[in-house]
Figure 1 (cartoon, one colour):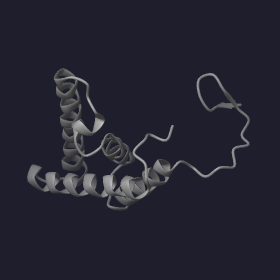
Figure 2 (cartoon, helix red, strand yellow):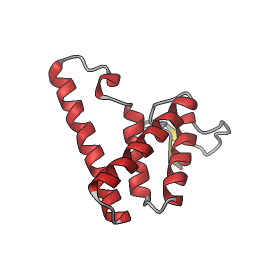
Figure 3 (cartoon, one colour):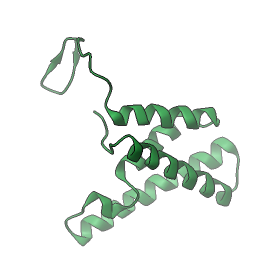
Figure 4 (cartoon, helix red, strand yellow):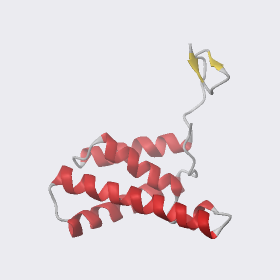
Length: 120
């Protein structure tokens, strides 16, 4: 028996469609793996897209919180850059263009599908 949350048992009888974000995630993963990237890259890319286009989109309550989210964004994007450079054997400037294009496409996918949540 699986779990739908920490407290609720799942009996396997859900018949609803997957959350819109999950469809977008599948689309993002499919697109980047077809280009030769790993699932790890696709999952990080999806996370960046879910977080939004910039830290302010997360509605931080304080300047300190904004600074922390900005650091998280920089770290995630740096991880994406490193993965592209390693997986595709490209220079940093080329990797930056790839990551920019992928982040834009991924956030557009989520926007089109009407969701920027993790989908559970």
